[in-house]
Image 1: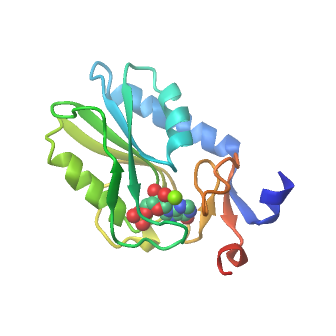
Image 2 (image 1 turned 135 degrees about the vertical axis):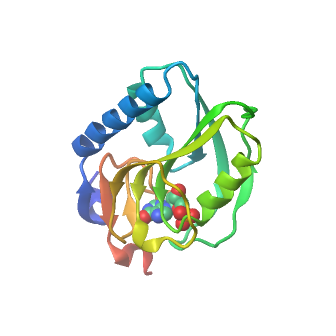
Length: 182
Ligand code: IMP
Ligand code: MG
């Protein structure tokens, strides 16, 4: 692990802190969605680890589905444009949908996705994000449940990447700026 750890400035959230919060969030879903068979919709790739842990903490029947959109590419700033690369397989009309995000940053990507999903007339549509970086918001998004509010720093680990690297770090860490300010 030393290669990845060397490029990290500090650990913001340890795997123990994350796991404890994810268990609480799973319990919230179990209570709110008992008997509703919700669809957990995740935007790849950043949320894949959060979703995997979250759905195992939710003690109710549910299904999962994935979308792929492009926003950041290899940089750290959102382009403001959202392109759907892979749409859902599930018909969500009449279903209870929970969008599961890794991080809400500018909110630009997410506001597009939420508007698009809403137009498909789900029974309900809510948003759960592990991380929220409110300092950077540019588009309004209603966040229903947040794991942690985080400072305005570029984060990696627990699914979050920089140029596809660091997703497998078990903790959430602040990346050294010199890594992306080449
Ligand atoms: P937004 O449209 O600016 O809210 O961007 C959302 C997406 O950008 C997230 O789902 C992440 O994939 C990515 N992102 C935003 N902030 C970070 C970060 O600090 N580290 C890694 N990825 C990030
Ligand atoms: Mg990303």
